[in-house]
Image (cartoon, rainbow, N blue to C red):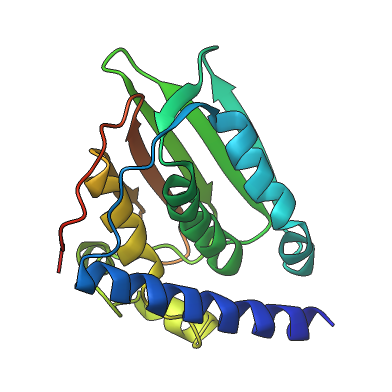
Length: 196
Protein backbone atom coordinates (compact mmCIF):
# COMPACT_ATOMS: atom_id res chain seq x y z
CA UNK A 1 0.00 0.00 0.00
CA UNK A 2 2.81 2.42 0.89
CA UNK A 3 4.60 1.78 -2.42
CA UNK A 4 1.36 2.30 -4.34
CA UNK A 5 0.68 5.57 -2.52
CA UNK A 6 4.20 6.88 -3.11
CA UNK A 7 4.13 5.92 -6.80
CA UNK A 8 0.78 7.65 -7.30
CA UNK A 9 2.02 10.74 -5.49
CA UNK A 10 5.18 10.82 -7.59
CA UNK A 11 3.13 10.74 -10.79
CA UNK A 12 0.77 13.45 -9.57
CA UNK A 13 3.69 15.66 -8.50
CA UNK A 14 5.45 15.24 -11.84
CA UNK A 15 2.30 16.23 -13.75
CA UNK A 16 1.77 19.30 -11.55
CA UNK A 17 5.44 20.32 -11.83
CA UNK A 18 5.43 20.03 -15.62
CA UNK A 19 2.26 22.11 -15.88
CA UNK A 20 3.68 24.77 -13.55
CA UNK A 21 6.99 24.87 -15.44
CA UNK A 22 5.05 25.37 -18.67
CA UNK A 23 3.24 28.30 -17.06
CA UNK A 24 6.62 29.85 -16.19
CA UNK A 25 7.78 29.52 -19.79
CA UNK A 26 4.58 30.98 -21.24
CA UNK A 27 4.32 33.86 -18.80
CA UNK A 28 1.22 32.54 -17.04
CA UNK A 29 2.91 31.73 -13.73
CA UNK A 30 2.87 35.22 -12.24
CA UNK A 31 -0.14 36.78 -10.61
CA UNK A 32 -1.32 39.48 -8.25
CA UNK A 33 -3.39 37.55 -5.72
CA UNK A 34 -2.33 38.70 -2.26
CA UNK A 35 -3.96 37.04 0.74
CA UNK A 36 -3.78 39.11 3.92
CA UNK A 37 -2.87 38.05 7.44
CA UNK A 38 -1.88 34.49 6.55
CA UNK A 39 -0.66 32.65 9.64
CA UNK A 40 2.53 30.86 8.57
CA UNK A 41 2.27 28.40 11.46
CA UNK A 42 -1.16 27.29 10.27
CA UNK A 43 0.00 27.21 6.66
CA UNK A 44 2.94 24.93 7.36
CA UNK A 45 0.98 22.80 9.81
CA UNK A 46 -1.60 22.22 7.08
CA UNK A 47 1.20 20.96 4.80
CA UNK A 48 2.44 18.61 7.52
CA UNK A 49 -1.09 17.31 8.09
CA UNK A 50 -1.57 16.69 4.37
CA UNK A 51 1.66 14.64 4.34
CA UNK A 52 0.83 12.40 7.28
CA UNK A 53 0.52 9.25 5.19
CA UNK A 54 3.72 9.96 3.27
CA UNK A 55 5.59 10.77 6.49
CA UNK A 56 4.36 7.54 8.02
CA UNK A 57 5.40 5.52 4.97
CA UNK A 58 8.94 6.93 5.31
CA UNK A 59 9.03 6.52 9.12
CA UNK A 60 9.69 10.25 9.42
CA UNK A 61 8.47 12.88 11.88
CA UNK A 62 8.20 16.62 11.27
CA UNK A 63 8.85 19.10 14.09
CA UNK A 64 7.66 22.69 13.75
CA UNK A 65 9.20 25.47 15.87
CA UNK A 66 8.22 29.14 15.94
CA UNK A 67 10.52 32.01 16.88
CA UNK A 68 8.63 35.21 17.64
CA UNK A 69 4.94 35.97 18.04
CA UNK A 70 3.81 37.86 14.94
CA UNK A 71 4.03 35.29 12.16
CA UNK A 72 1.29 36.55 9.85
CA UNK A 73 2.10 37.77 6.35
CA UNK A 74 0.43 39.24 3.30
CA UNK A 75 1.37 36.70 0.64
CA UNK A 76 0.10 34.73 -2.30
CA UNK A 77 -0.95 31.81 -0.14
CA UNK A 78 -1.31 29.26 -2.93
CA UNK A 79 2.07 29.85 -4.51
CA UNK A 80 4.03 30.23 -1.26
CA UNK A 81 2.43 27.02 -0.05
CA UNK A 82 3.53 25.31 -3.27
CA UNK A 83 7.14 26.45 -2.75
CA UNK A 84 7.22 25.24 0.86
CA UNK A 85 5.50 22.02 -0.14
CA UNK A 86 8.15 21.26 -2.79
CA UNK A 87 10.98 21.64 -0.27
CA UNK A 88 9.13 19.62 2.37
CA UNK A 89 8.50 16.80 -0.11
CA UNK A 90 12.23 16.61 -0.85
CA UNK A 91 13.02 16.48 2.86
CA UNK A 92 10.66 13.51 3.22
CA UNK A 93 11.96 11.59 0.21
CA UNK A 94 15.67 12.25 0.71
CA UNK A 95 15.83 12.64 4.48
CA UNK A 96 15.48 10.04 7.20
CA UNK A 97 13.84 9.95 10.59
CA UNK A 98 13.21 13.61 11.32
CA UNK A 99 12.57 16.96 9.65
CA UNK A 100 12.97 20.20 11.61
CA UNK A 101 11.06 23.25 10.42
CA UNK A 102 11.71 26.64 12.01
CA UNK A 103 9.89 29.91 11.27
CA UNK A 104 11.81 33.04 12.27
CA UNK A 105 11.04 36.71 11.76
CA UNK A 106 13.77 39.36 11.51
CA UNK A 107 13.76 43.15 11.73
CA UNK A 108 14.00 43.59 7.97
CA UNK A 109 10.37 42.48 7.52
CA UNK A 110 11.35 39.06 6.18
CA UNK A 111 10.45 35.61 7.42
CA UNK A 112 13.03 32.86 7.27
CA UNK A 113 11.65 29.34 7.04
CA UNK A 114 14.26 26.65 7.61
CA UNK A 115 13.52 23.07 6.53
CA UNK A 116 16.29 20.76 7.73
CA UNK A 117 16.70 17.01 7.25
CA UNK A 118 19.44 14.53 8.12
CA UNK A 119 19.41 12.66 4.83
CA UNK A 120 21.59 12.27 1.75
CA UNK A 121 22.91 15.83 1.65
CA UNK A 122 24.06 17.89 -1.33
CA UNK A 123 27.56 18.47 -2.69
CA UNK A 124 28.81 21.98 -3.36
CA UNK A 125 28.70 21.37 -7.11
CA UNK A 126 25.12 20.10 -6.98
CA UNK A 127 24.02 23.02 -4.78
CA UNK A 128 24.83 25.42 -7.63
CA UNK A 129 22.80 23.67 -10.32
CA UNK A 130 19.77 22.16 -8.54
CA UNK A 131 17.81 25.39 -9.13
CA UNK A 132 17.82 24.80 -12.88
CA UNK A 133 15.09 22.91 -14.74
CA UNK A 134 15.50 19.12 -14.71
CA UNK A 135 18.69 19.25 -12.62
CA UNK A 136 18.94 16.92 -9.64
CA UNK A 137 21.60 15.94 -7.12
CA UNK A 138 23.58 12.78 -7.83
CA UNK A 139 22.28 10.92 -4.77
CA UNK A 140 18.68 12.00 -5.29
CA UNK A 141 18.45 10.26 -8.66
CA UNK A 142 19.42 6.98 -6.98
CA UNK A 143 16.90 7.29 -4.16
CA UNK A 144 13.97 8.68 -6.18
CA UNK A 145 14.69 8.08 -9.89
CA UNK A 146 11.18 9.21 -10.87
CA UNK A 147 11.50 12.79 -9.62
CA UNK A 148 10.72 15.56 -12.11
CA UNK A 149 13.76 17.74 -11.45
CA UNK A 150 11.39 20.74 -11.35
CA UNK A 151 10.45 21.11 -7.68
CA UNK A 152 13.41 23.26 -6.63
CA UNK A 153 13.31 25.24 -9.87
CA UNK A 154 9.65 26.14 -9.26
CA UNK A 155 10.25 26.98 -5.59
CA UNK A 156 13.05 29.36 -6.64
CA UNK A 157 10.83 30.97 -9.29
CA UNK A 158 7.99 31.50 -6.82
CA UNK A 159 10.14 33.04 -4.10
CA UNK A 160 12.15 35.34 -6.36
CA UNK A 161 8.99 36.57 -8.08
CA UNK A 162 7.63 37.46 -4.65
CA UNK A 163 10.77 39.34 -3.56
CA UNK A 164 12.21 36.47 -1.53
CA UNK A 165 14.82 33.79 -2.10
CA UNK A 166 15.83 30.24 -1.27
CA UNK A 167 19.27 28.90 -0.37
CA UNK A 168 20.67 25.56 0.76
CA UNK A 169 23.32 24.49 3.26
CA UNK A 170 24.88 21.04 3.36
CA UNK A 171 28.19 19.52 4.41
CA UNK A 172 27.98 17.01 1.57
CA UNK A 173 26.83 13.43 1.04
CA UNK A 174 24.98 11.85 3.97
CA UNK A 175 25.28 15.05 6.02
CA UNK A 176 21.73 16.28 5.59
CA UNK A 177 20.47 19.50 4.03
CA UNK A 178 18.96 22.75 5.26
CA UNK A 179 16.86 24.81 2.86
CA UNK A 180 16.17 28.38 3.96
CA UNK A 181 13.25 30.21 2.37
CA UNK A 182 13.08 33.98 2.86
CA UNK A 183 9.67 35.58 2.37
CA UNK A 184 8.74 39.27 2.72
CA UNK A 185 6.11 39.98 5.34
CA UNK A 186 4.30 42.15 2.80
CA UNK A 187 4.43 40.97 -0.80
CA UNK A 188 3.65 43.53 -3.48
CA UNK A 189 1.47 42.45 -6.41
CA UNK A 190 3.60 40.93 -9.17
CA UNK A 191 3.14 41.19 -12.90
CA UNK A 192 2.26 38.41 -15.29
CA UNK A 193 5.54 38.63 -17.22
CA UNK A 194 7.45 35.62 -18.47
CA UNK A 195 10.53 34.52 -16.51
CA UNK A 196 11.81 32.03 -19.09
